[in-house]
Length: 391
Image 1 (cartoon, rainbow, N blue to C red):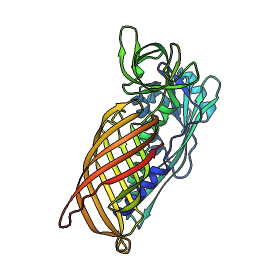
Image 2 (image 1 turned 45 degrees about the vertical axis):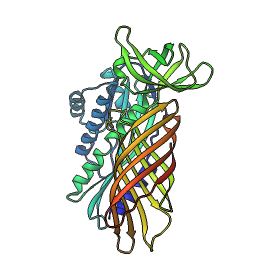
Image 3 (image 1 turned 90 degrees about the vertical axis):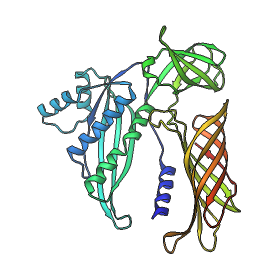
């Protein structure tokens, strides 16, 4: 059962991606109305209302919007005897509330079925979020999203779990669509000062991509603010150095990295998925590290699996090169596919050193060396070497 869970998690990580067609740049808070669109496939108004409340919550957490009040929206829906809106309705209501943009939520599927294999209810939800310009009705961005949930109690709980699992994805998507924009006002050494954006909208550690006047690209990270003149203070990371008046656009990052690579341990060769966070985004405040490796070789008809879970920190950063140190719990096991169970298992601890090179903040190659120490009757201790890429 554990092995299937691990495989499912790995596959899920591999297929998840963020995509936004178009979008808008933001320099100050924008007015936004979020409305329910058409429904089908098992949705009802309570589920719709719950999902809308999650979208509103994530929008407020992002801090870039003035939202059309929910109470006013419910009053309008009641007066007009409406449960859903079309784009023309969204534009009219948006103008009524002084909104500049409208998000229309189109719900396409919500279902839950009992799985004998997992012995739980498994739910799936699909919906589309579309962003419109209130002034002219232009479609600015569209995102189709899908999420899953499960519960061993009721199908309703599985559905609720599926809806709740969309929260972080919605937050990331709103951040991708509504990107902050500023311009370089001065540069002194590695200190780059940005202006033209409300500092209240900019969190520390946010990364800006600067397109220079010569056509190159440089990256800076927010370190603080100047309350006197309302500018944003950043530190130059790497790339081409910007000049005054170069445009800086937010480079949305999650602080969450997923790397795919190859590894070797005790004479075995395998494929690996490694996940680490840098604690740079408020949604992911901690710094964690985990790796799962499935080896291609067999030991007495058993499939070896190597798992590390722990925490870490960036020890050194020089331009595009970084060094990270990790540590925590380790497990090496031999999986018996006939019994669907682990026949041999070694528990222990590990320390890890990780060398990274960034092409940009989301494209990284890395080499890691781990030293695990296992406890038990048979001592097993040997270097684990991994090479991979995050993109």
